[in-house]
Image 1 (spheres, rainbow, N blue to C red):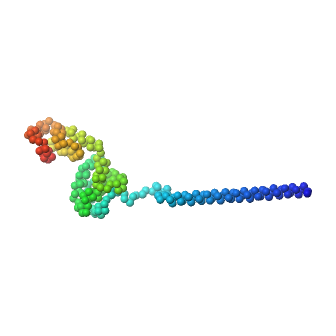
Image 2: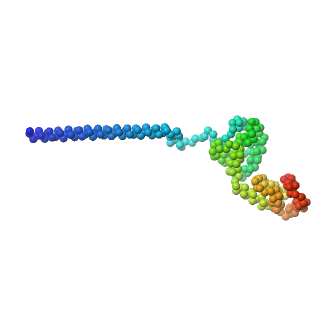
Image 3: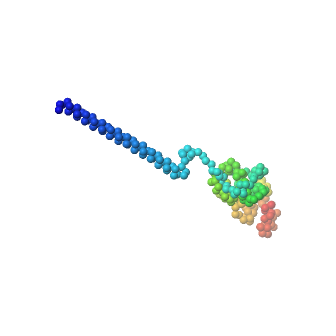
Length: 254
């Protein structure tokens, strides 16, 4: 066979071998791409299945959107109280509490009790009526405090009262008032009846002072200035020294 024919045959064999390798390589590439797309699709389907299995799953945008509970009030009212109709007359006479440091929480509660007693009860108890009206008495800082409590966490008037007193009548206030009672002093040029009224106000602001009536009389008399004290002793010498102190309770409370 001539040399040129042999060279042509060898070239054809090499060309056909390269073409077959290219075909095999293309097949493998197509196969890898197909496997990759199948894997991605399976991964997405698995993620969708996991999302479907989570009952509280939400899009990210919903986590930054504010939501309000259908029961935003911390006071859980019974159905009878919810159906109790409050009129403009009721709102106009209710006392207000703003949560200011200058306000007296106990005086507000006493005023609130006295006002609620003038309302018709209907089918409610007095405690239920107090629960019904209480949110309308709070303003500004006090209103924000009530709204900050967990919804439905206050189920009776006792729990409302305790929470209110804990927040607006601190332990430090109790300690301060308890110290003022035994250390009471009449001011210069202060009339006797003015001093007595101021002393009674201290007792009213701290009804849990735990001082006996005898101790209260002693604290008040010790706080009087000399001339007034001497006058008081001269007028009440028999009552103060010869009789039992409890018999003069009416005099001291007048």
